[in-house]
Amino acid sequence: MKVLIEDIRNKFSQKGLKITPQRVVILEAIYKLNNHPTADNIIENIRESHPNIATGTVYKVLETLVENGLIRKVKTDKDIMRYDGIIEIHHHLYCSKCDLIEDYIDEDLDNLLKNHFKDKNIKGFKIEDIVLQIRGAFDKC
Amino acid sequence: MKVLIEDIRNKFSQKGLKITPQRVVILEAIYKLNNHPTADNIIENIRESHPNIATGTVYKVLETLVENGLIRKVKTDKDIMRYDGIIEIHHHLYCSKCDLIEDYIDEDLDNLLKNHFKDKNIKGFKIEDIVLQIRGAFDKC
DNA sequence: GTATGTGCAAACTTTTTGCACTTCG
DNA sequence: CGAAGTGCAAAAAGTTTGCACATAC
Image 1 (tube, rainbow over the protein chains, first blue to last red):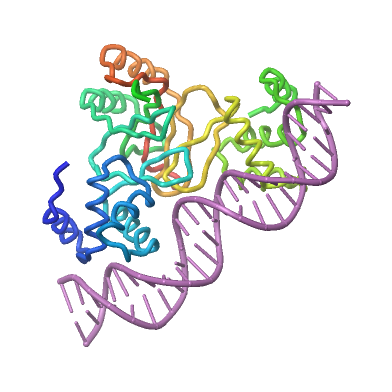
Image 2 (tube, rainbow over the protein chains, first blue to last red):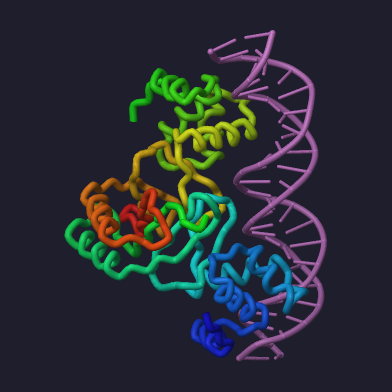
């Protein structure tokens, strides 16, 4: 994934967020790592270029990014939070043998779901979005 | 939900697990609470009848139950683990306004998915099960 | 009787918080 | 300059661990 700093700066501006080196480097790391990193993965990754960044800052920045829709939290059944730089709706393949979570994009599937829930609505509940957790095993694992 | 102690005891026996009062009361609590309780919800619930149970024991029992397929962990984007007493495949409605997670059962949907993934398989990945995270808002919230 | 399970308290991990200091715009 | 953001260190919250004791079978 090609990551342009200029794009990242624009995203912050569009949301009215101040552009700070910490925010830029954190969002850049999420895009580069692009395998649903944990806060720790991110810290490790940016320590090279930014050794003085504080853990608290990283968590605060991540929270800000989530609130502003620049990243998403990924649901897992571990007690470590993971983050996703892709904000368009997509699904996740969870490996049952290791911690790998891969993205899965499938427009046919999204259309299928859209049609299904157009006919059949859930009473007392208004759907905002649907994400599939597809659990299984990667051949490589 | 009617919870029969005898059923719970049988489940433990079938898995070769010793029947202890702690295990019985914990599984019973999960069935009774049936709203995807946290470890804390469970402890609170059983303290009335079982005031001396240790936190560590509750976590160990929960882990044993998960390993033996008697309960499931529920994926959330909070850092608190939640548990589900329903082990058959079903989907979840996540409220975007509060912490409510409701079960959603839809056989038509399951058939739709089965057909979709029969035709279209994901290369390098063998699907074990699929759970939908349906995010939205309950009218009551 | 023996393998398995529990209680307890301490430790560990991840995340949050408060406040003085700094920086962006 | 002023509002917003950061660093730091302490603490909170949730979970795990190790070991002596207790219990199920």
